[in-house]
Length: 287
Image (cartoon, rainbow, N blue to C red; front, side, top):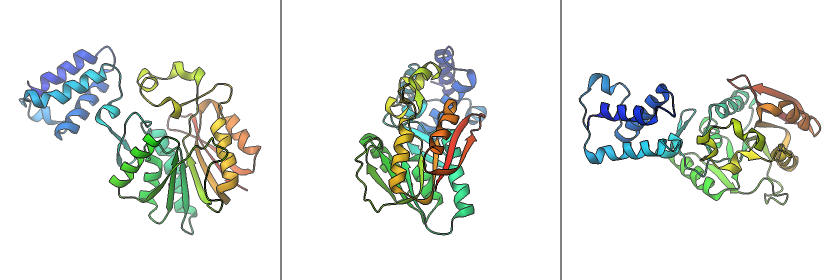
């Protein structure tokens, strides 16, 4: 079958679910992934034909897209900053807002760093935060923690692919008896913890709700800052004096999250908006 005919089938089958531009993106991402073909290929070679065997992965991807499964899970690949990462349904798909959080850390490190740093990523998932920091801060000692062994398997694979040294810890930040050496202190702790309230589920697209891991997304309405309190408790034991916290937060709870850190042993608390103008990040220093 002609490749351009398969593109037409993508549009016919997915037209009621997605905008035309998004369907184009799906199709070109698939032919790039499976055949290493560039987006412009049909413009210069409209007669490209695929065999039945070659067609198969495209039609399998199309069938999964019709269920609204995210393309990143179908191709098992996601992009974060300048990294190509392996992903599956054990981990969240990395998002642009989290890139902004990492960039904030990197910008501050370039300005303020006067010594080697020890960093921790809490709830590492795919490892995107820890690996991006390790790639850019070559002399930093980077740790990453997650409760999910499945997520840690993905993160370890990504760290190996990108040839960075990250110490992975299988621990639960909500466990008050979390087992780390008492003398282990971090200069920087970064986290993108679960923060979406159950009441906000109606705002979440089906492809997120039905496929991404719930435990990495949602918190109970009655205790939406559960993970931030746990991080504060952990920081009290393992964040160096004058150490920094960088956190992704719920856009609707910026004031409440800031007040929580003000009520504890933190100073210079700063909220920062994401590229969409929402309160999305918080930085705090330990006094």
